[in-house]
Amino acid sequence: MRKKTIVIAAAISAAIAFVSLAAFAVLVIPADATSWRSPWATRLAAKPATPAPIVGEFTGEYTEGSPVYRLPPVTVAVDRKSELARIEREEQLAQAHHNHARLAAATPAQQAKPSVAKRNVPQE
Image (cartoon, rainbow, N blue to C red; front, side):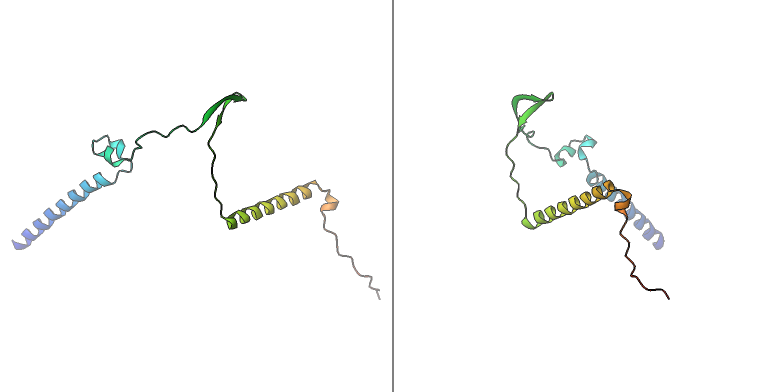
């Protein structure tokens, strides 16, 4: 009788734990809480208070049928080491492209490597 009581108590506590975990999962797991359309979900999703302002100013001109806008200035900050590495990488790519184009434009005779000249060794 005592073993039966322990088994029933364990089954009840397992059921309670399962229901608690399932309820917690339903409340926490949804990545897009607004898709559930419940009143509490809208509080979870971050919404901007006002839409982003339009920063371009129409100049009144058109280029190739598209309107031209004047944008505010942009400040760019760059680390000197990374900028020098970028410039060096671009130069290496340009040199490789130049070498490839030069090789492609060369004639087959120019593409062949010059053979090493043999020394004149007297034959016996």
